[in-house]
Structures are given as C-alpha cells and as structure tokens.
Length: 376
Image (tube, helix red, strand yellow):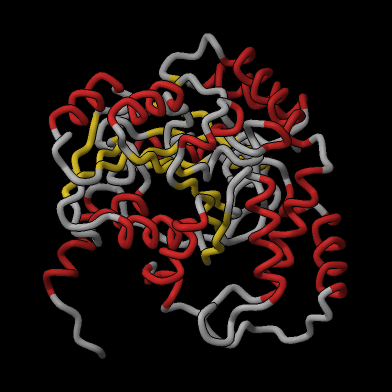
C-alpha cells in the first residue's frame, strides 16, 4: 500500500467529524432539477447538438483533439472566429478563450496584478478569484460584501499605489444576489481604478439577449476585463475574457493558464459557437426571468431566504448536518436540491442552494414552493 502523510489523513478525519467530508456522486435523473447551473436548459436542448454538428461540417473539422496549446498547434480558424463572435456579442474589442472559468480568473489575475499593485475584492468572491490573486505579487484587501463605502475608503487609503484593481462577481455564486455594479463602476472611475467583473452567473440571465449584468447596467465599457463562463446558462464548457486589444495581447503573452495548457478542441469551440447562436435566437432568458419572478412571489413569506433576482436562491439552514438533512428531505420528495456546507460558505451560514431554470414548469415551481412552506 502506498504511504500517505499522517497530517493529511488527520485533515480528512477532521472533515468527517465536522460533517463536511466531500464525495463525488452521480446525479439522480428522476428528480426535478433545482440544483444545476443549466439555467436556460441548453445542455439538454437537442438544437444545440444540431447547431454544433452544422458548425463542424462548415469548418470541415475531423480531428478529435486540439493536439497542443494555442501557441503551438492548438489554434485554428474556429477558435479565432469564435472569439470574434464573443467579442462582438459582448461589445468588446477582443475576446480570448480559456478552458474554464477557473482558468480564466486565475490567468487574468495572476498575470495582470504586479508587485506594488493593490487589488480590492468583495469578500464573497469565488475561489478562482482568490486563487488568482494569491498567485500574483500584488497586495490584496477584501471589502465587506457589497459595502461600497468600505470600498471607497480602501481606494482612498491606497491611492498612492501605481495601479489599483477592483474585482467582483456580478452575481454571487453562493448567495445569488447582485453586486452594486453601477456604484462600484462610478467609484472606480472617480479613483482611476481598473474594474474586473466575473459574469459567470449573469450571462444568459440578464441583459439584452442574455448579454449579462454589465450590459443591462450599461457599464461594459467601464470594465478593464469581463469574464464570461460557459458552463452555467450556456450549457457547455470553457470561458472567455473580454476586453481591449492590449489586454488580449498581454494575456496571450503572460497568462500561464492559457499558455501552458492544451487548447480546447474544435468540437468544444463549436459547442460554444452553437450556444451563442442559440442564445441570440431563443426566448429562454425571458422564460427564466418569468420563473424567477413567480418563485419570488410564491416564497416571499419564507424566513431565512436571501433576496435574489438571479437564477440562484438560497435558504439559510445553520449547521452542516441540518443542511444535509434538509436536502435529503427534498430529494425524497422528488426535488434535486443540494446543501452547501462550510467551509464552502462561512460556518453558521450553511444553506440550501436552489437554482431555477427556464425549463422548470409553473406546476413544478408551485409544488416545490408548497413543499418548502410545509417543511421549513
């Protein structure tokens, strides 16, 4: 048997005693989906495959793998055209594909932030943002969630820094609430700070034709970089960074998570193109917004519910064991809802994380809300 460090075993044992030991499980296909990030139902939409196959045929692509990094053999015309399509759709000069949203955040933050720079970030930012900052040589300070007053104080306090960056998500992945982007954008303008926004959970949900919250609030051109992830509402995989031509060139030269990894294969890029084509020619974003409005109307009296206009809705249930048991209750009643435990969220703020979809029927929403009212 291979040796394993005792210190690491003790960490695993601690997870078990604290009821937050993670395991990988297969999804139950017989449940009503209130847990996946497939907000528009694109991953199950047969039209997506039809569009992908048509695109692959158009480009006469036969090879299965990309065979190398973008800088060696992994680049192709479909990659270039896909990036042009994304940049145009999101009103940016350029877009650059990454293999995942995690890779995009790590690539941008670890390469852009330099020694002597200051980066300010919302305390609830995603782990990929935290990891990207940790890999840089910049000094990072967090501000309380959506506390624009504290952000302004930190900006003024650090105004002598050569460059100051502000990083936030537009929709927070665990709470489902939105950043105060209009206020944050205005503050960044007044203090000459560079604004970086992760739109992972906003694309397909907000804005014209699902362009995101930056589009809805008309602040796209105020951003230094915007990150769009395709594994949520877009129903596929990968991500893109949208920004200036200079940012594109800089990332191609310095973003290690782009340079030193095998490129997305053409089949994956075709799926991304297909998903954007579908997004521009569907009413699913409108259908999702209607379901969000209905669900809020049905559940507005429930206590411990975090207010949200996004696809993510949460009910706080303190304690890992309590959250797990609540999830099991709902699963037994036919609804796929997962518990979010500490340390993923702060201890004492454990919760049920509920994801709404354009494909959820009005009857499903009514039955689910009734179950919540009768049990919690």
